[in-house]
Image (cartoon, rainbow, N blue to C red):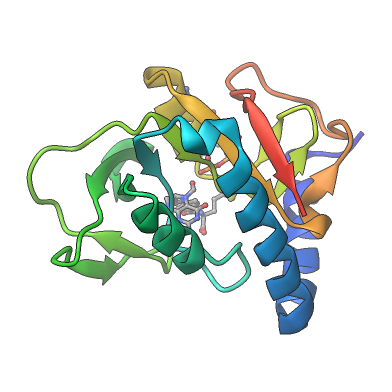
Length: 180
Ligand SMILES: Nc1nc2c(c(=O)[nH]1)N(C=O)[C@@H](CNc1ccc(C(=O)N[C@@H](CCC(=O)O)C(=O)O)cc1)CN2
Ligand SMILES: Nc1ncnc2c1ncn2[C@@H]1O[C@H](COP(=O)(O)OP(=O)(O)OP(=O)(O)O)[C@@H](O)[C@H]1O
């Protein structure tokens, strides 16, 4: 058994190593994108929540393009005080600005939109749907407050069979894990 903090640190180190092998990372991302597009979760969704990735995370630009090509809407998160998030539609006119966390976020315009499918980011995922994220608790809070389908895209260094950490009472189990 490890602490979430230990799992997070080891997972981040493994993701940093993979990011230094771009061909390997891109090959895994291509597999994840194809499996996502082929999934019933993707095909039945109309509004999909996703992030704008950091360099060590799964590249989301190809996912954005495929989602738009499939005629679906995309919403991306804006972090708010008290570890809250709201999602706003990503359109050609969306203005993005870099957050303190270092990722691009939309400026607030119009009303927030709750997606019907969330692609949930994270550091390590168990194949039975548990997750260690970056430590903010943003997604645990959001998914506790809103019902929707959920999927994570797990690069090879992000996959474990079952959690080797103790799952907290506030952790939200993800409905689908897609593996590279
Ligand atoms: N690309 C991307 N965007 C995302 C996320 C993500 O995982 N990936 N998020 C997923 O949630 C949200 C931002 N998550 C955050 C997670 C942690 C901290 C943060 O302040 N971390 C502290 C350490 C926290 C701790 O260890 O207790 C820090 O960096 O100092 C900020 C934002 C929304 N946007
Ligand atoms: N539903 C909730 N309500 C209130 N606090 C919560 C809730 N879910 C999580 N938290 C708090 O958030 C903190 C971070 O949780 P955790 O370490 O699991 O984050 P994470 O899932 O790795 O982060 P993220 O979702 O931002 O990627 C914990 O201290 C926890 O108490």
